[in-house]
Amino acid sequence: MGKIITICNQKGGVGKTTSAINIAVFLAVAGKKVMLVDLDPQANATSGIGANKHDIKKSTYHVLLEEIDIRDVLQPTAIPNLVLAPSNLDLTGAEVELVGSLGREYRLKRALEKIKIEFDFIIVDSPPSLGLLTINGLCAADSVIVPVQCEYYALEGLTQLNNTIRLVKDNINQNLTIEGVLLTMADYRTNLTREVIQEARNHFKDKVYQTVIPRNIRLTEAPSFGKPIYLYDKDSLGAQKYEELCREILGLPLKDAIVK
Image 1 (spheres, rainbow, N blue to C red):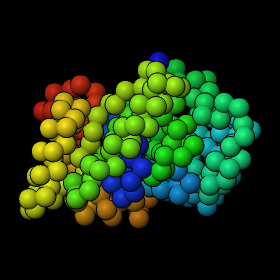
Image 2 (tube, rainbow, N blue to C red):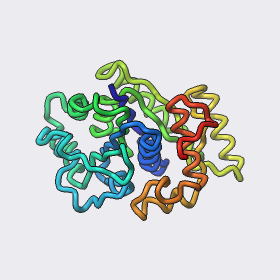
Image 3 (cartoon, rainbow, N blue to C red):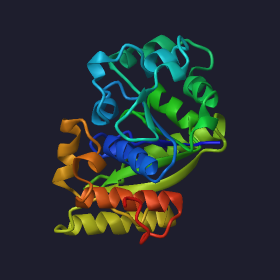
Image 4 (spheres, helix red, strand yellow):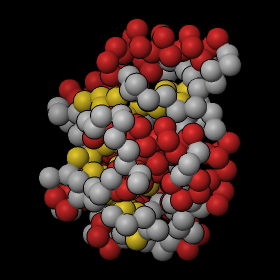
Protein backbone atom coordinates (compact mmCIF):
# COMPACT_ATOMS: atom_id res chain seq x y z
CA MET A 1 0.00 0.00 0.00
CA GLY A 2 1.26 3.47 -0.91
CA LYS A 3 2.96 5.81 1.53
CA ILE A 4 1.41 9.27 1.92
CA ILE A 5 3.93 12.06 2.63
CA THR A 6 2.72 15.61 3.27
CA ILE A 7 5.16 18.48 2.65
CA CYS A 8 4.39 20.98 5.37
CA ASN A 9 5.60 24.28 6.80
CA GLN A 10 3.32 27.15 7.78
CA LYS A 11 6.06 29.60 6.80
CA GLY A 12 5.97 30.64 3.14
CA GLY A 13 8.96 30.86 0.83
CA VAL A 14 10.82 27.82 2.16
CA GLY A 15 10.81 25.77 -1.04
CA LYS A 16 7.81 23.67 -0.03
CA THR A 17 6.12 23.45 -3.43
CA THR A 18 9.44 23.13 -5.30
CA SER A 19 10.25 20.22 -3.00
CA ALA A 20 6.83 18.58 -3.38
CA ILE A 21 7.06 18.71 -7.18
CA ASN A 22 10.62 17.48 -7.46
CA ILE A 23 10.34 14.76 -4.82
CA ALA A 24 7.29 13.41 -6.67
CA VAL A 25 9.12 13.63 -10.02
CA PHE A 26 12.32 11.89 -8.94
CA LEU A 27 10.39 9.14 -7.14
CA ALA A 28 8.51 8.57 -10.42
CA VAL A 29 11.78 8.63 -12.40
CA ALA A 30 13.03 5.94 -10.00
CA GLY A 31 10.18 3.74 -11.23
CA LYS A 32 7.70 4.33 -8.42
CA LYS A 33 4.05 5.01 -9.15
CA VAL A 34 3.35 8.46 -7.70
CA MET A 35 0.45 10.87 -7.21
CA LEU A 36 1.08 14.56 -6.50
CA VAL A 37 -1.82 16.13 -4.59
CA ASP A 38 -2.06 19.94 -4.72
CA LEU A 39 -3.82 21.09 -1.55
CA ASP A 40 -2.82 24.76 -1.88
CA PRO A 41 -5.35 27.27 -3.33
CA GLN A 42 -2.45 29.07 -5.02
CA ALA A 43 -2.11 25.94 -7.18
CA ASN A 44 1.63 26.40 -7.69
CA ALA A 45 2.28 22.66 -7.71
CA THR A 46 -0.37 22.35 -10.42
CA SER A 47 1.20 24.98 -12.67
CA GLY A 48 4.75 23.95 -11.74
CA ILE A 49 4.20 20.42 -13.05
CA GLY A 50 2.84 21.76 -16.35
CA ALA A 51 -0.96 22.01 -15.95
CA ASN A 52 -2.86 25.26 -16.61
CA LYS A 53 -4.53 26.01 -13.27
CA HIS A 54 -6.99 28.38 -14.98
CA ASP A 55 -8.35 25.51 -17.08
CA ILE A 56 -8.97 23.19 -14.13
CA LYS A 57 -12.69 22.50 -13.77
CA LYS A 58 -12.56 19.70 -11.19
CA SER A 59 -9.96 19.89 -8.45
CA THR A 60 -9.08 18.85 -4.92
CA TYR A 61 -11.74 21.36 -3.82
CA HIS A 62 -14.47 19.10 -5.22
CA VAL A 63 -12.76 16.06 -3.68
CA LEU A 64 -12.75 17.65 -0.20
CA LEU A 65 -16.42 18.58 -0.56
CA GLU A 66 -17.01 14.91 -1.48
CA GLU A 67 -18.72 15.91 -4.72
CA ILE A 68 -16.41 13.75 -6.84
CA ASP A 69 -14.11 10.74 -6.57
CA ILE A 70 -10.42 11.62 -6.58
CA ARG A 71 -9.88 9.36 -9.59
CA ASP A 72 -12.03 11.75 -11.62
CA VAL A 73 -9.70 14.72 -11.05
CA LEU A 74 -6.41 12.96 -11.79
CA GLN A 75 -4.41 14.27 -14.73
CA PRO A 76 -1.39 12.74 -16.46
CA THR A 77 1.89 14.67 -16.44
CA ALA A 78 4.91 14.74 -18.73
CA ILE A 79 6.61 12.31 -16.33
CA PRO A 80 5.72 8.62 -16.74
CA ASN A 81 4.39 7.08 -13.49
CA LEU A 82 3.34 10.50 -12.13
CA VAL A 83 -0.25 11.80 -12.00
CA LEU A 84 -1.58 15.06 -10.56
CA ALA A 85 -4.61 15.81 -8.40
CA PRO A 86 -4.78 19.52 -9.28
CA SER A 87 -5.87 22.58 -7.32
CA ASN A 88 -7.40 25.89 -8.34
CA LEU A 89 -8.70 29.03 -6.66
CA ASP A 90 -11.96 27.28 -5.72
CA LEU A 91 -10.02 25.69 -2.87
CA THR A 92 -9.90 29.04 -1.04
CA GLY A 93 -13.55 28.50 -0.09
CA ALA A 94 -13.09 24.98 1.23
CA GLU A 95 -12.11 25.95 4.77
CA VAL A 96 -15.21 28.15 5.16
CA GLU A 97 -17.56 25.62 3.54
CA LEU A 98 -16.27 22.75 5.66
CA VAL A 99 -16.14 24.61 8.97
CA GLY A 100 -19.42 23.16 10.27
CA SER A 101 -19.02 19.72 8.69
CA LEU A 102 -18.66 16.62 10.80
CA GLY A 103 -15.32 14.88 10.32
CA ARG A 104 -14.01 17.73 8.17
CA GLU A 105 -10.39 16.87 9.08
CA TYR A 106 -10.77 13.44 7.48
CA ARG A 107 -12.00 14.44 4.00
CA LEU A 108 -8.64 13.97 2.22
CA LYS A 109 -7.87 10.81 4.19
CA ARG A 110 -11.17 9.24 3.12
CA ALA A 111 -10.58 10.22 -0.51
CA LEU A 112 -7.07 8.78 -0.61
CA GLU A 113 -7.97 5.55 1.18
CA LYS A 114 -9.96 4.53 -1.90
CA ILE A 115 -6.94 4.80 -4.19
CA LYS A 116 -3.87 4.50 -1.95
CA ILE A 117 -3.21 0.88 -2.86
CA GLU A 118 -2.67 1.86 -6.51
CA PHE A 119 0.40 4.02 -5.74
CA ASP A 120 3.82 3.61 -4.17
CA PHE A 121 3.89 7.23 -2.98
CA ILE A 122 1.35 10.02 -2.63
CA ILE A 123 2.99 13.43 -2.13
CA VAL A 124 0.74 16.17 -0.72
CA ASP A 125 1.66 19.85 -1.13
CA SER A 126 -0.05 21.76 1.69
CA PRO A 127 -0.61 25.54 1.93
CA PRO A 128 1.68 27.81 3.99
CA SER A 129 -0.64 27.88 7.00
CA LEU A 130 -1.86 25.63 9.80
CA GLY A 131 -5.52 25.81 8.76
CA LEU A 132 -8.01 23.11 7.86
CA LEU A 133 -6.38 22.27 4.50
CA THR A 134 -3.03 21.57 6.16
CA ILE A 135 -4.78 19.59 8.93
CA ASN A 136 -6.40 17.46 6.19
CA GLY A 137 -2.95 16.85 4.73
CA LEU A 138 -1.54 15.84 8.12
CA CYS A 139 -4.53 13.67 8.96
CA ALA A 140 -4.17 11.76 5.68
CA ALA A 141 -0.38 11.39 5.90
CA ASP A 142 1.80 8.58 7.12
CA SER A 143 4.63 11.07 7.56
CA VAL A 144 5.68 14.69 7.07
CA ILE A 145 8.64 16.29 5.33
CA VAL A 146 9.38 19.74 6.74
CA PRO A 147 11.38 22.07 4.45
CA VAL A 148 13.42 24.62 6.41
CA GLN A 149 15.06 27.60 4.74
CA CYS A 150 18.69 28.20 5.71
CA GLU A 151 18.02 31.74 6.93
CA TYR A 152 17.56 33.72 10.13
CA TYR A 153 14.35 32.88 12.08
CA ALA A 154 14.00 29.70 10.00
CA LEU A 155 13.82 27.41 13.01
CA GLU A 156 11.55 29.63 15.13
CA GLY A 157 8.29 28.57 13.49
CA LEU A 158 9.13 24.90 13.84
CA THR A 159 8.04 24.89 17.49
CA GLN A 160 4.49 25.81 16.44
CA LEU A 161 4.58 23.26 13.61
CA ASN A 162 5.88 20.58 15.98
CA ASN A 163 3.01 21.33 18.37
CA THR A 164 0.49 21.02 15.53
CA ILE A 165 1.98 17.71 14.39
CA ARG A 166 1.86 16.43 17.98
CA LEU A 167 -1.77 17.51 18.38
CA VAL A 168 -2.73 15.77 15.14
CA LYS A 169 -0.84 12.66 16.24
CA ASP A 170 -2.45 12.64 19.69
CA ASN A 171 -6.00 13.30 18.50
CA ILE A 172 -6.65 12.26 14.91
CA ASN A 173 -3.68 10.41 13.36
CA GLN A 174 -1.66 8.41 15.88
CA ASN A 175 0.57 6.93 13.16
CA LEU A 176 1.88 10.31 11.95
CA THR A 177 5.67 10.68 12.04
CA ILE A 178 8.23 13.19 10.82
CA GLU A 179 9.76 11.64 7.70
CA GLY A 180 12.53 14.22 7.67
CA VAL A 181 13.60 17.83 7.94
CA LEU A 182 14.83 19.19 4.59
CA LEU A 183 17.23 22.14 4.58
CA THR A 184 16.63 24.37 1.56
CA MET A 185 17.98 27.51 -0.12
CA ALA A 186 21.46 27.00 1.30
CA ASP A 187 24.08 29.57 0.38
CA TYR A 188 27.43 28.22 1.55
CA ARG A 189 29.08 31.60 1.01
CA THR A 190 27.46 32.78 4.24
CA ASN A 191 28.20 31.81 7.84
CA LEU A 192 24.45 31.96 8.54
CA THR A 193 23.72 28.96 6.28
CA ARG A 194 26.31 26.87 8.10
CA GLU A 195 24.96 27.98 11.48
CA VAL A 196 21.34 27.09 10.57
CA ILE A 197 22.43 23.68 9.24
CA GLN A 198 24.36 22.98 12.45
CA GLU A 199 21.51 24.16 14.67
CA ALA A 200 18.98 22.03 12.77
CA ARG A 201 21.19 18.96 13.07
CA ASN A 202 21.73 19.60 16.79
CA HIS A 203 17.99 19.96 17.39
CA PHE A 204 16.49 17.33 15.07
CA LYS A 205 19.44 14.91 15.01
CA ASP A 206 19.09 12.15 12.41
CA LYS A 207 15.71 13.47 11.24
CA VAL A 208 17.61 16.05 9.14
CA TYR A 209 18.37 14.76 5.66
CA GLN A 210 22.03 14.62 4.67
CA THR A 211 21.05 16.21 1.37
CA VAL A 212 20.82 20.02 1.53
CA ILE A 213 19.09 21.88 -1.32
CA PRO A 214 21.16 24.88 -2.44
CA ARG A 215 20.05 28.19 -3.85
CA ASN A 216 20.03 27.44 -7.57
CA ILE A 217 18.90 29.70 -10.39
CA ARG A 218 17.68 26.76 -12.50
CA LEU A 219 15.37 25.63 -9.68
CA THR A 220 14.01 29.17 -9.50
CA GLU A 221 13.42 29.39 -13.25
CA ALA A 222 11.81 25.99 -13.81
CA PRO A 223 8.29 26.75 -12.43
CA SER A 224 7.86 29.73 -14.78
CA PHE A 225 8.22 27.26 -17.66
CA GLY A 226 5.77 24.82 -16.07
CA LYS A 227 8.48 22.19 -15.72
CA PRO A 228 10.03 20.26 -12.86
CA ILE A 229 13.82 20.61 -12.70
CA TYR A 230 14.22 17.11 -14.21
CA LEU A 231 12.68 18.33 -17.48
CA TYR A 232 14.04 21.87 -17.34
CA ASP A 233 17.70 21.07 -16.59
CA LYS A 234 18.39 17.63 -15.18
CA ASP A 235 22.15 18.29 -15.13
CA SER A 236 21.82 21.32 -12.82
CA LEU A 237 22.98 21.22 -9.20
CA GLY A 238 19.37 21.62 -8.05
CA ALA A 239 18.33 18.51 -9.99
CA GLN A 240 21.27 16.53 -8.64
CA LYS A 241 20.35 17.44 -5.08
CA TYR A 242 16.67 16.47 -5.42
CA GLU A 243 17.80 13.20 -6.96
CA GLU A 244 20.07 12.65 -3.95
CA LEU A 245 17.18 13.46 -1.61
CA CYS A 246 14.97 10.85 -3.26
CA ARG A 247 17.72 8.26 -2.89
CA GLU A 248 17.69 9.06 0.83
CA ILE A 249 13.89 8.73 0.97
CA LEU A 250 14.09 5.37 -0.81
CA GLY A 251 16.97 4.21 1.39
CA LEU A 252 19.34 3.85 -1.55
CA PRO A 253 23.09 4.47 -1.36
CA LEU A 254 23.80 8.05 -2.42
CA LYS A 255 26.26 6.88 -5.07
CA ASP A 256 23.52 4.99 -6.98
CA ALA A 257 22.07 7.41 -9.50
CA ILE A 258 18.36 7.36 -10.29
CA VAL A 259 18.70 9.31 -13.54
CA LYS A 260 20.53 7.27 -16.19
